[in-house]
Length: 309
Image 1: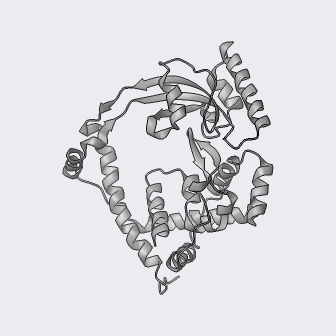
Image 2: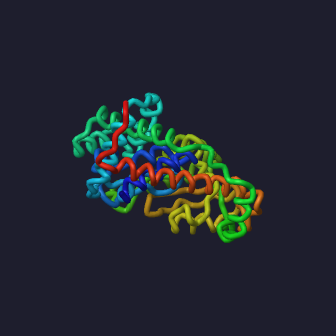
Image 3: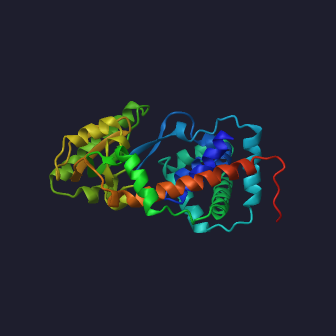
């Protein structure tokens, strides 16, 4: 039940704001149907400045009998849930964007034995399954002020906030396996963008025009606040060299080519209880939901599971 329980728990985390496209790709049913789209170990895309790797989405696991039973029970039980067609189409578009071109996406679909329509149907199944699970988990799991304070005092180290940077970037994808001629082309392109920046054009404008980070280009390349734990080491090392308002020269990480502009820096500090209370309450509530989800996963994994329609 390990993998399927994890899928259930990720669905619960979705209540707290996990990105839907990532959620879908980690569901057991989806992995089994579409995992071969992603191969093994290579970069798929950049999401919020962080690399998303094929090994995170692989569909090559050998599922146990109980996991397969649970997946089928969940699909069957949730089949009458209503889906928002616009949301499904939007998530399909996000998945498609991770392949860079329509040709690459269609090729991957063909290699996996899927069509765009069948993939969309699989994704719609995941929306239905998630909606059903959410309905099974009570929302009245609010933590009291006393519970939150006890948690804070027992785990103060969790609220030691490291130095955080807010930055925007221009990104051109060129992961390690990229052919040399493509790498050369991307390097010339990033250098041309750097020249336009030096001549006075804004990074936000250029990001919207040319950046290949689909997750940030619509907001001018803004990565939001991040610490070292959220970014590749070689990327963060370049950011650390900059002061507020400074822009880096073009550099390459294992993901590709970047130009980074730091817009704000927050120094390391310990969050006070009142600042942390909201997150603590959410963590306690999600922990309670997780226990309910574990029991639900066990129930769905029983071969004799039945539900009246």
